[in-house]
Image (cartoon, rainbow over all chains, first blue to last red; front, side, top):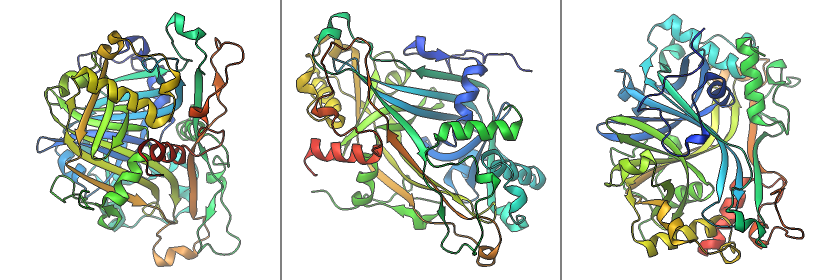
Length: 237
Length: 237
C-alpha cells in the first residue's frame, strides 16, 4: 500500500489557488477514474504538443492509447517526460464582478516518464484491460484480436511519479459588498450524460446490448458510469 | 479575409488517421467556438505541462485566462511556443473487435507563440470580451473592475500560426466478417448539458437570471450554447 499522498516537488506543487490543491491519492485517483479522456503534454523537437487520448488507471500506472504511426508514440517511445491531465468541468460560476467569475472543476495533473509496451503478452493484457475497464464483461463477447492487430496497437504507460489535483466546488466568492448588487449570481451546473444507444446499421436482427453496456443508461452522468465501471473492473466498488 | 486553410507544416500535419484531418478554417473555428475549456501544453525548465483553462477565439487570436501567480504565466511571459487543444467527446464507438473500438470526437490542435497582454486598456478590453463572449450582455450588469483587479488578472493571447482538426463522427468500422457476429455494435452518444441554474445563497430577494443567462436553459447541449453565444458576441449568428 503506497503512502497516502504524492510527494510535493517543484514539478507538481500548485502555484495558484493553493487552497484548491490536493496531493492525496484519495482525492486524485477518483478524478482520474471518473474519466476516459485525458490530454497529454509532451515535447518533440522542442515543440510542445497537447494530444487528447483515452486512458485508464491501474494502481499507480496510467495507460493510454496510441498508434505505431502517431507522432506522439515516436516522440515518447524513448521514455520521455509527460504530463497527463484530466479535467471535469462541473459548472460556470457567475459572480457580480467579472473578476470573481470562475469555474467549478475537478482536475488532475500527473507527471511521469512514458514508456511503450513492447512485449506482446503484456500489450495484449493491456488491450484487454482497456476494454474491460470501461465495459466490464465485454472482452468475453468479442472475437479474439489477431496478432496483426496486437502489433498495430500501441499502448503507452507511465508510473505516476508526482501528481496534484485542483478542485473548486462552490458558489460565487464575491466581494462582501457585491452580494447586494441586483445581478444574478450562482452556478450554471454542467454534466456530461449518456444518450440513447444507437445501433450499428449492420447489426444482425435480434442482437441487443449485453450486460457490458448496462452501466450506460440514457441520462446517466458519464463520470458516475466511469467511476462505477472502474470499481467493477478493479474490485473497489 | 485570411486564406481558407491553415498552412500544413511538419508541426500541424496529422500523422495518424489522415482521413479524419482538416486544415480549413471552416472546420477548425466551429470546434474552437463550441468550447470554453482548452488544454495548453507548454514547456518550463524542460518539463512539459498540460494546463486546463478557459479560452475564446476572436478572429485569428486565441485568448486564455491565467494569473500573475501561475507557473504557466511565468513560463510563457517571454513568448514561448504553445499548443492549445480543444476536444469534444461525442460518443463511444462499440465494435465487434477490441481493435476497432473507437471514439467519436471533434478536436483541434492550434500552434502559436503565447504572449501576455500587459497594456491595461488592452487587458481590460480582453476581460470584458471574456465575459461577453460567453454571456452576451452581462458586462453591462456587473460592477466595473477595479484597477487592482485588472492588475491581478492575466490574459494570454496567441495568433494561430498553424492548426489542424480531427473529426470522427460515424458508426463502428468493423472488419467485414465481424459485422455478422452476435455482439452489439453501435455508438454510445455523449453530450454535455446545462443543468438547472443554482441561485447563490446570498442572492437578494427578487433577483432573477438576466438575458445574459437566457442561452443557458436546462437540458441544452453546452456546445450549442457556446456556439450561439460566440455568434452573438462576434456577429456571425
